[in-house]
Length: 170
Image 1 (cartoon, helix red, strand yellow):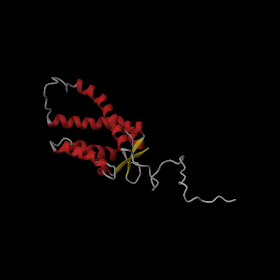
Image 2 (cartoon, helix red, strand yellow; image 1 turned 180 degrees about the vertical axis):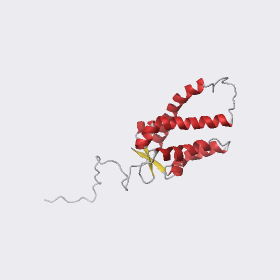
Image 3 (spheres, one colour; image 1 turned 90 degrees about the vertical axis):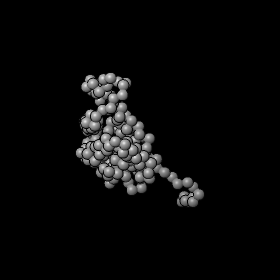
Image 4 (cartoon, helix red, strand yellow; image 1 turned 30 degrees about the vertical axis):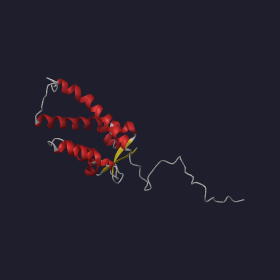
């Protein structure tokens, strides 16, 4: 006897199939995993740069109010981007992951799903918003807008739009 199709039966799903979107690409990374990865990456850079800044005297006179010059702020920002690129460069070049993204199983890809180059990631994705953050008043505001864009339907931050990237599950 042939088995008949029951039109009222719920559809069957093969749970062993890797989750992919309908177009065959990896699904977008969740906002929580992106936040967690950014926090891990930030903590790692803080652990590296904090002692260096301390040895260079950045914290002399703390907790008194100290307003660093624009040049000091700019050099600190560029040093942060450089350390970030050095610490994460191997993983970014190999598979579009920082250490935090690797730990949480997500990665950066171009919008077409291809792997971006290390130069594109650093120069197009990280450097512009690091430089923009130096602009008085507007910089922090634009930084906030950059981050809040992740709540749009595309789930991409401003730096993703500028660099033509997205973050997906690895």
